[in-house]
Length: 448
Image 1 (cartoon, rainbow, N blue to C red):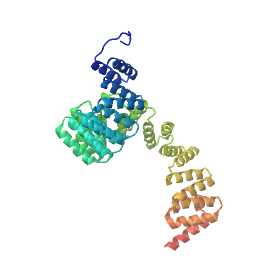
Image 2 (image 1 turned 45 degrees about the vertical axis):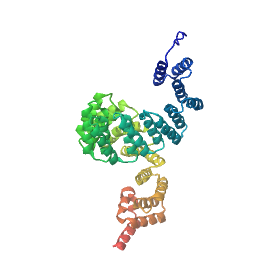
Image 3 (image 1 turned 180 degrees about the vertical axis):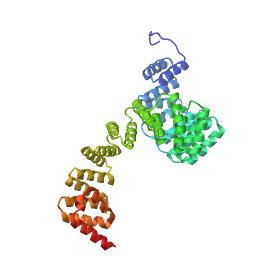
Image 4 (image 1 turned 120 degrees about the horizontal axis):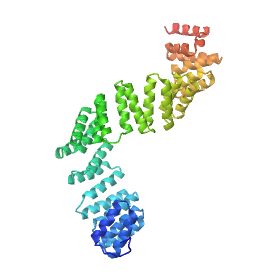
């Protein structure tokens, strides 16, 4: 009709079907044309006017939608769809409590309550009212046992309130009435997994994949559970099934690699980590796992290559910079190690190990004043620590500030006398100082 400009008569139901088809297909401009033509032929149709309201709401023309709804309500004050659309407008405006009032009114006028309960559940979710949301979605399930969307939402509400035991009871009751529902078994397994009852979780996932042998989610969760039970080869087998059922994912490759690493099959682990980063080059987790594996094998050149890949993706991760510094130290690239430690501090990783590592590298490079400055920063957070006091002592002796050196040496001895051996490792010339030797001997005699 649109193509030829000829006018054909369509009955009301046909117009509604055409409009709904276009709305479902996301072709709103065609839906609007169909509404316009429909109202020209059926100007009194409330249903077509309500579809026009729906399109106004889609396009965020809420004032036009509200105005048309008022006219429709005057014609049919007990039409449930009027209140459903009013609720939709209120929800779009962020007035979720108002939307709930409209939906509860819609319930009094409709025979098909399922959709309204579902909408109510969503409004309660917007308000973080998980109890009422759960009750609304549960009513949907009572009407339609195969409303899996509602089932997911019920479990989600239990999850948000951390009511995992209650979720288990609910799901077991559901399964008693609908035992061949793989979704319910899968969700039950997830709850057991969360409370670390891995044996029952495994049983649940077994049932899920028995009911539906192509249920990828079931195999994934089963594999993760087998990992927790340290059945790594079985876990690998289940991850491999997911690769057969669907396109390979970097996630599955990484998990397989980790299983092989725990089995100490390092070549296989490397192979799957490489597959993961090939599948998703922006997966920093894959690069860092390769880094750590080669670091543990003391292959620091390769570890250095892979950590640089991880840092290109996420250079705001302090744990990556820490590993970067550790690798550079092993390779005797001390300036790069300093840079890595400084990045850790800039990213708020101010653990004692970072301060000490940076101090020791700066000391090795002869940057003694910078090393002292780092230790003073550390001292603000970590008070009365022998690790800091002895290092400050050594640095001040090197800088020919004996008074400060002795003060910090005494402070260190008071905290932990035996830890003075650190001077031998880092500042051997200080420990050879006769005055230092005498103080150490005299102090030991005094405390004995």
